[in-house]
Length: 72
Image (cartoon, rainbow, N blue to C red; front, side, top):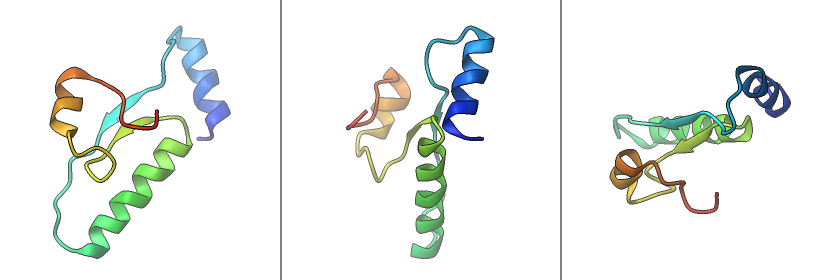
């Protein structure tokens, strides 16, 4: 789903903000961490406000307070 499709879906639902997600994952190995990073980047590119520990070292406070990650 592209950015325009997300915006249209949100508008149809009367939602003024982008969907938000907190990604929790195991840090098994570098390959898995890279896969998660790619997924988070793709979600963000499609309009989802994603919190990922590699972007926000205070991700626990993000989940609790719902503040936007840096750069958003």
